[in-house]
Image 1 (cartoon, one colour):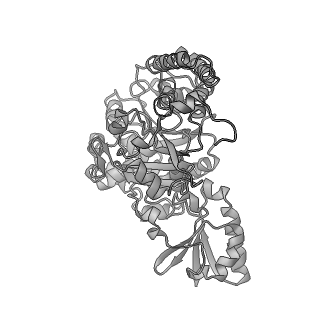
Image 2 (cartoon, helix red, strand yellow):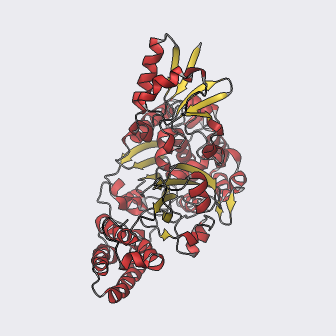
Image 3 (tube, helix red, strand yellow):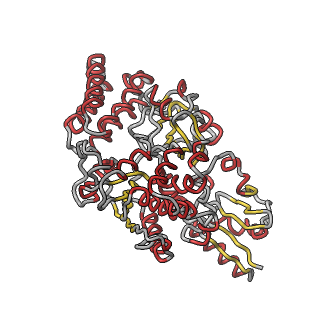
Length: 518
């Protein structure tokens, strides 16, 4: 009788020793003459439990974690291969783990379940059904389905996906492109990586559907160079999908063509901005372009281009398979569907949480995150990456949706949630925001290039007690200038975390904490 054990192979699990765990399991099985099948699946996104080892039983998969290599022998003696629960690391059925069971997984329903490169696994769980339905209708019908879903870009601007697609669709016939922004550079974010490492065919399918919708025959995944495992998995998945007929000159014998390639970025945060990304993809320095013209009209190599991020494109197969209304049934207001929230920072249970829009930060941080890793009280949380505002406790009960957050200066962005306990010096965090911009600015516009440098200097003077009140006024004016005058969101949003510290944590800015007093 064969025993099937799942050991994840995503970046997080590998960093925590998953390969060594798999090797120990193989060795122990040989020593016991057991017929063991190890499947290197993707992660479920429960990062604090990695490596999460699962054993297939008649009742379903039984989970154990976090498993370190030195735990393997004791787990086996306690009945790991039989799925017994006589060990402190035993977690019961994977699907019943509260952190996972309480989620609403639409986009991330397959991660952790399948071997990421197995086409059989993917198609067994309705993979490529959305593509087949897209092939059965015309381009406008695909766009209308996406429009009915209410899907918006899962990045900073939250622009309606269907409107972008419609604009490209309506351009004259000729070469058009689909570009996936996989330059996931926001602090505390890893949802794109999980899709690419754990369910790569989902992204491939979403991009092929987008190509059918707008008449594009070529796609590019612009991937950050810091994701070597995602790069290897995507290349192999694209090759297998092409061989199986899901990509190429004649997709599933439909007469429609779509080709896909991965291109690596070079570690520039600014290349997460769509026009800077396009410049880089063309082989140029990643400088922001002035708009108009929009990329949907003159994008890659001057041709109409859809630029969407990973999560936007990965939501499309579900929408085409189940219908736009099924997706729109989740969420609230103008924020429809689900959002991939990524808990990071000082958090007890970090990981991916997919929920419908409308959950509050407090529910997320307490019910899923379990509070801080340090056990100290929470002081602030930054949502939406390094350019998002720092939110005080008074804003943690606001439902997470685009318009609601915008009303008080918050940013949903890519869904990164970075938590800070009461030992944090928020004055340091304000300075970090300006310093980050000074390092990562492309330098094309003066408010961003010079404003961030001056911002660091002004904050340093305030922190040193040099004419603090006058410099606070100067800092406020500088922030307004950057917001109103910057060419793109890099300089335009850098003041958000600074302004939030000035408003909600002024004492930390004016009176820095003494070393050792935290």
